[in-house]
Image (cartoon, rainbow, N blue to C red; front, side, top):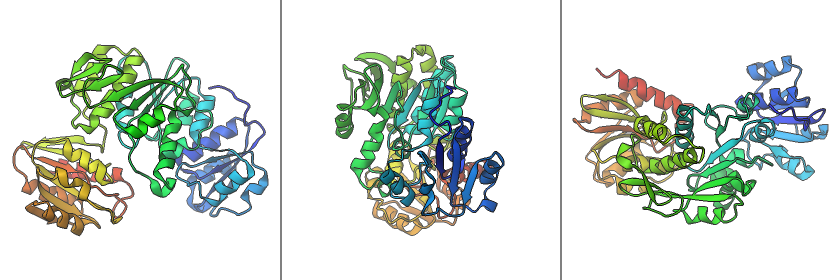
Length: 450
């Protein structure tokens, strides 16, 4: 770890706890800052706050005082989920106080370079796939960021010869100042999180931040099939490496129905790839490009691509039972993600879907409903999904109370060679705290089938 003096004897406010807030507070304390933590959860209900207090860190819990910034803070490190219209964040902006996320802290202390991966969809799969390629290639990479491992904690122990493969959300990227990855990746850009960002333009600018500090020594891997991303690429100072799933291209990395090409030359046959779905081809091209740039052996790349079947909860193959295949796509919390999952299969599908009702339309799924033979719906959207399925000509429509019932009913409706797919098209919060718990419930129910 670089022993920086940026925060020495400086007053720093950490706003919001959770894993990243705790890690940031502890790191800043070790770096000599006078740290104050502010979190809405009452102190007596927060073991994290109690632990920080025991280390000599000032803790203000249960409320966000209006005059909090009167204490003379010189930096604010905020939880990524706190929006910028939060009164304290707005007040910090008015006072000219830098507001960062812990990703910036990670960059400031890290002796290892970063690979920064962002996009509306595919971040986790790309990050995980690239990590496996580099790891099996003997490069001892580290993995961090929005994937669940706090970046500044990983950066503390990173060595100069390593690389930190980092999944980055738009929320995290809005809070950077000097963060500069040696390789940045922007997988795709679709409308998302507009309740947080306010507009698609602001969301796009947040994603573009992954390359905004790069120089001609760095590389930006970007989706040349999306005009909005091409527009951002023209503003990058990095070397540009485009990817395309629309056929063989002479520049960058590309793919057609049979091959993946590296600067127009065949690199490998697509039939070698184990990961299902056209939507995953973008992720594969991104990870493959970065691996080649980092001199990962070709045989290692091929081995990973023939064995990697997906990230948990993201079109994850769970089990084959009596010639039926079960897939867990609990991460599909919107129709765009479920659309991609449906497009990944040519076999008949028993679709398990449903969850929190935000009032959004399911129309985006219609063009891919032709091989859906049954829908088993649950949660707040159960009735709407059933009505939508009927309008698409799906003959078998069942409504159930929970995931366990859904698996039993879906299995009873299935025949040999069918796919039973959990791809909810909805958030989980009507019945589960997060999509991971929903997916775990599905996996458990699948393995209970005898």
